[in-house]
Image 1 (cartoon, one colour):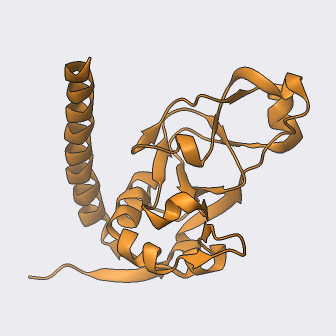
Image 2 (tube, helix red, strand yellow; image 1 turned 180 degrees about the vertical axis):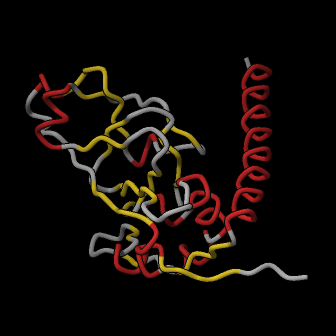
Length: 183
């Protein structure tokens, strides 16, 4: 008994949006209540906060807001040579131009399913890595959109997502416990 799977390009399953950086010369854009995610703060599987925040004015002048539950993927930076930073937005967060916000838009495909699929495909994503003229890593959007994502039948997708949620939940609990023990 096998599992039926089809491979669909990521660009047919999700929308991509680029972020931005408000001018750092305008103080009123910074220090507000909106967490602003950059390569440095795109850590872990879920992001809730950042050491940098922007104001509503800063958001309107040059950044974008990622909805809770959307995916944030670093697509440019030297950190890509070590790992592929990918996280779920745990709350609404702003993000810079080196990050793509990915949101599922295909019927029956959830952001969490895409998250787990992309995590599983990290070696394939790493193989797409290019180098910019200044030596930073770069993931080209057109290549990401062409990345074949395994799409299981709806009931199998639900089971995979539920199973992976349990594993990632346990990892999160272990990380918190380790944090408590380190104090």
